[in-house]
Length: 238
Image 1 (tube, one colour):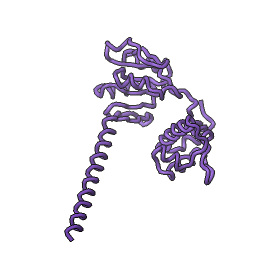
Image 2 (cartoon, rainbow, N blue to C red):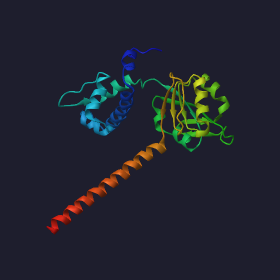
Image 3 (cartoon, one colour):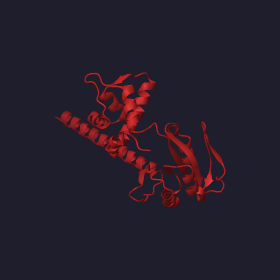
Image 4 (cartoon, rainbow, N blue to C red):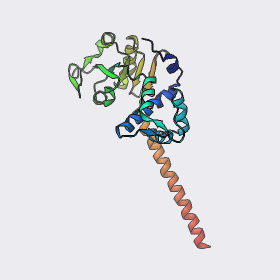
């Protein structure tokens, strides 16, 4: 069903959409802690972005703070929520009932605008098993039922948390079932038609990036310490 704000939301850059979702999370946290007004600096720091970028992102949803005061947390929350259509409920199918899949099923993020309606796996020992907590419980169905289940339950978002070996095949099945939004937790670069949007979440890759940053920081610190030590020794010798 078309939304009245389709023209506005369709013009928001993808990178801004991702950051707006982060701002929404921060704002809700602020509200839970009794914060009524927040400056762009406070919001930017909490979200880990530059204040100028935050203000640019918020301009896409028509949000303007009061100079010298900041943003009304409640109003800004409502405005971003409207732009991101968080009032909509999306049906999610989860492929992969292993440790990662079960952890995702239990994630609290599924309680706000997202409803897991199906879970699949190829392991016969897992098929037919019930998993879930907090009111979200799923009976694992075999992969052979994926297409029919997605069609019957109007799935619009899929999560691929399978082994890498069957990731592309699973993705293809989702696409054939009409799913156009896929969250990929495998290390495989999934190939899809242009009409399908895939967001990769490679945990191993993110850890490698952090490890590199840590090593570079340690190396920089060591170089700085050596330089300081050398300068001190020269000063003493003089």
